[in-house]
Length: 200
Image (cartoon, one colour):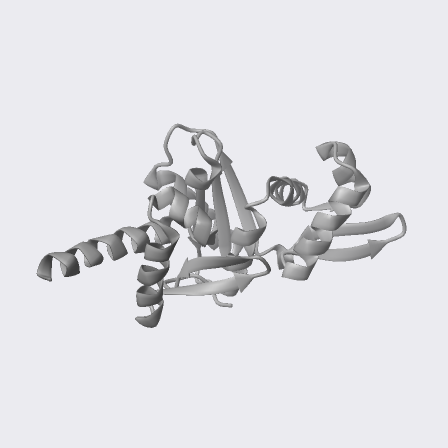
């Protein structure tokens, strides 16, 4: 009985630490990454949720899992959005150029206007970008310019890279930063959220 209890604690610690590192994954992704059957995973997740360590947010077809520690509403929305490559590309382009029209995004990203429109609509609905009507069409800007995106292409992200982004956030009086390392084997391993007094 004691051995089973210790085994459960170790499994829950493993699950919780993984959720801290990779927030916003849905159950099947968690099950696949951790190599834990869904029924077993559900059992442990219910236990962690009951004790306030995690929260499970239903989103259309998926239930996404977040650690309750230090994650706000805007962060969750960003995490959900950047899981899709097209949405990530759009956000990166808008962040680097500060604003962009639908036609410009379609040209630069070599995607159909319909695809761009679909993703822009979703990003606006999530509150991540804001549409600004102008004569030639609609320009989009990042949400109240709250987010700074820092791009790297290194083998491993060091503490100094995170401190550098935090310094940028403090100097610019921004609240949320995303550090994206394209040198990582998997994009999820290269995503880091840096917070400067984030309040939702």
